[in-house]
Image (cartoon, rainbow, N blue to C red; front, top):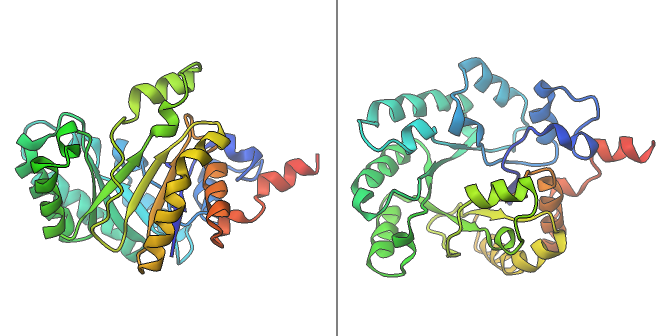
Length: 278
């Protein structure tokens, strides 16, 4: 199974493509999940969903849909203090999604380096008691292909956790000439690409531009890698960004088409049908 999706499931600008033209915000997830079977789950990075919201997410998605949710920024980016109680409480509330919750994405700031490895390890261990942890690091030392990266990988293997692979080369190959590109260049990580997987669920974040031909050039190696993962019996989770994510669904679909994978995103979308009749 290939899980393919965007950074979010709610973008009003998708009403001309993925979503119905008259879609309400409450309809976005259900309509998105007709064509994509996962999303990066950025929403929990910024705010805690209520029990009612979690139940609605579960009801609005088909049986095969899987959530990947980010640990809240207030926990993952805290420099001091005891995170254990907060993280335990948050993980407990996320179990309302039951088997639809596949991975917990622990995204760390670039300041979290080898000196914080013990704290990072404790968080990964705590998460791994309930769900597989997908750890995203940005500190340069964890890309050294030497002692620091080796120590990180040994820790992940110990807890059967995954390392999130980031590929932002396509984004940074384009000069930041628009507000969306300026914002993306300022916020997105620019780190080496290490195509690594330690579990049955590799995670790829491909951060592209609005130039689909350029994106295709940069994701070519991933076509082979994802097929290799699938042939090995793995279940990849691949998420595709564009600067403001207006074209993220189209980038996902282009990748699936080039992969020659029969993903549901290849179908004609409601917005496309409606606007083709105008």
